[in-house]
Image (tube, rainbow, N blue to C red; front, side, top):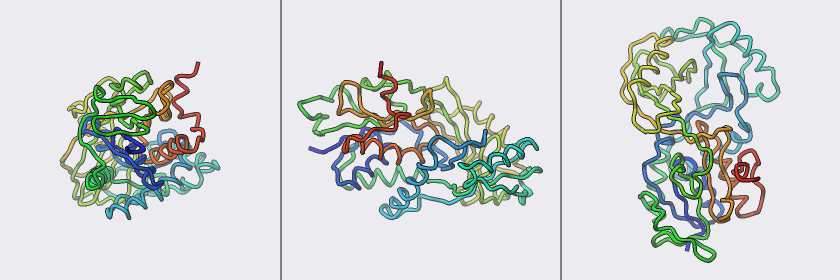
Length: 347
């Protein structure tokens, strides 16, 4: 018998696995490749919402937890995951410049927002009004993380690659049974797959489709993330990730020509060099109506838990939410009420 059975091995599942392992708990993971959000993610960690120049929810605390979390993972897995990159917000108007100055004076933002306008030094980018710089930002290579972590678990015999079959799941006295696996607790970190989860499909997980391109632009030579109507993230080797779209009706993982053209039209407003599209991917972000995660126990099955709803900020939220869930289960500590899924079940 293991302490935990975890369903899903995206950013949420991996973060909870790590939290368990660092606390000496046994676990087994069941996961398939049906949910692509973590795989296709841009991987940016940035505490600031750059459309409105405001702090993202609980971002400072999440940053303080996430950075050492990924540093330990890099050492453990012997791979490079964290690429430090500054984020430059392209100003489209003088009003945006003024808004930046106001935001940079706010106590919760002054640590991250440089008060100085960064003049454009790249002739391949059209930015006559310059940029605002966000500090202490970067990119987590989510594809490498997901691939290497699954291999790590497989080598330890802790990973089953299959779609979780609820017809083989049994609730017994004090524990659960799934095929040949018995566990004391089960945590569903199944992303948008939650919609097919009979225990948690009552939760208001909307799902937002995002599509991203990878371009090759040998003449661009840019080392910072550029954020305008779309972002450009340097990947090395003259490759850049471009994204992302937000679609609320289409719930497939299939890339569309419509979204590709939307991204290219926006990209061409400020990128002034030749490029080639070399990849196009899509995934469904697990988004929630109130833009807060879904973390906690089932209202009647107390040993069945949900770890979900991280939206587009999974890189930052996952370590924080995993720690909150672990402390709730093992130590009886309350989950942050803003993300406790009980907010949707209490009368």
